[in-house]
Length: 87
Ligand SMILES: [Zn+2]
Ligand SMILES: [Zn+2]
Picture (cartoon, helix red, strand yellow):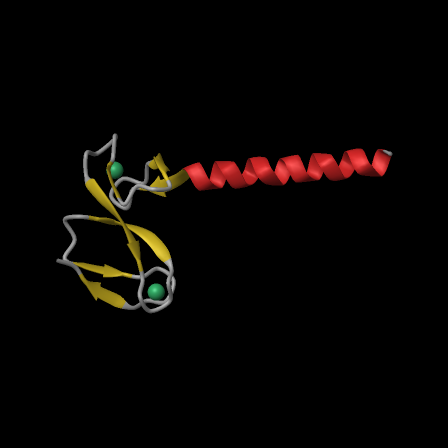
């Protein structure tokens, strides 16, 4: 019985963690370093601290995900070091 309760607790914890990570992410502003909570569906947000327009970016070389400033003309992937030309 005790074992069953522990298992149920673990399952509910896993579900809670899954729901949280699916609905909210933390973006770190590359301009001022502010941590900004954002929806996982967002692909662009404005930093509440410095007002910079930020874009979510996925490296097509290593599939790493990071945040860039929309003013940038190039972005270097922090994971694999490849440089991307931005529009
Ligand atoms: Zn900022
Ligand atoms: Zn990369």
